[in-house]
Length: 165
Length: 85
Image (cartoon, rainbow over all chains, first blue to last red; front, side):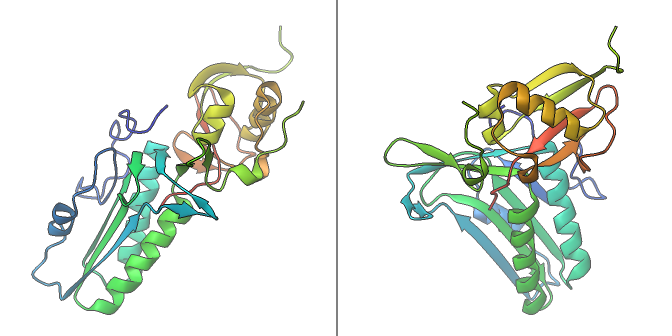
């Protein structure tokens, strides 16, 4: 299965109590303004966002592009749980996260986290918590493509065993 | 007749395991009693080059223990090291 083939929206996993999804995977480019507007709240005194961008190097090698692949049903479920945990743990008003899947180029927006709060402290803390959990827990994989024409799955190549023959 | 009870399950593969297996999903009948036994069988049969110590497993879209018993119709996913963000 390749990224973005409809694996992501075929079930209700990952929806909040009101049926509203705070976490989602997107095969399409992310639009910051719309994401930010969804967090507008007259009670909010601050808003913190984290944007993960595709950079042109990793682990000492030049990178020319990336592909993200996700296990959609579980990623959306776990993503929603991360945002619920942030809402319980920090004094925030709301939090959202969107993660790209599919082919991305250098400089593209790969992941967006936004948090609104009455005061800035919990907004910063919750934003960091969310991106750390997203990177650590979600079943999302990143394949890097190099100028020499080869490619590699980040965090996976080093643990592949030598071929049996 | 098989000595052990055979279960029909679906296995999905992602990322490096999808490439190593050469397909994204398959239906199969297995005599494995647990997800761990199933992975050991599949890794040996298809030369999957990732040891189970590097993987997690999900059954029916929830993380699961390797020694959880398999049931008829389960959907099983072996999860390589993740790299979101």
